[in-house]
Length: 253
View (cartoon, rainbow, N blue to C red):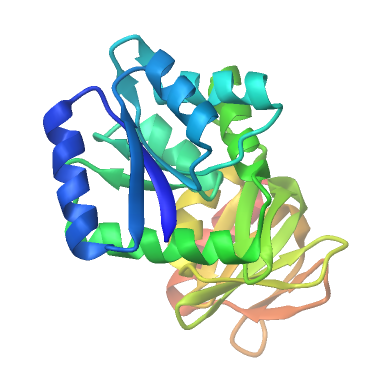
């Protein structure tokens, strides 16, 4: 069994989550509930669950306050976290950069099952909670242009400077990251998801299979259909519809 606590100030929503978990994830054992920052911190500190289902907006603060206070008490966060939220774009963006799972209200059963599978995978392969520290760092600073990204691999969660990412390559429903001074790493998310996150950081999708960091672009070669040479000496094709866009970007560099 995987132990969990529900922290939400709406008793009806807690009851609904209990019912959904009982039906769609019966091996998740809800060992406690809380309805505020204070009661949530006390419950987590006392019971030490493996997973927190945590609402962002609570009567006496936020879910982030819960994590901050737990970090102060324990020195670190020792539970995996699933945030439950309405459409709060800044928070969702922060979750995605931190490789943290979230559920949108009203909670969809299919999405719940996907998140449960991912949480179990993380629990089985890692006791690294650095990605939660990254989330709190970004929330605390109230930055909107994140400098680091958490990537969840088959052996755990790793943090990288976004400026060190040379390029990303699509492999079916996976994305391979090529990072300066690191071996390539494979992430079980699509290239489109990372395109949405990284475009504002100077990345450009030049092909259905390739997303590049323009800072590491060495050459644009027009012959042989057009391709780019990257800092890692890879030669990457450019799709026909991306050539004009890339040429415009190069003029501005």
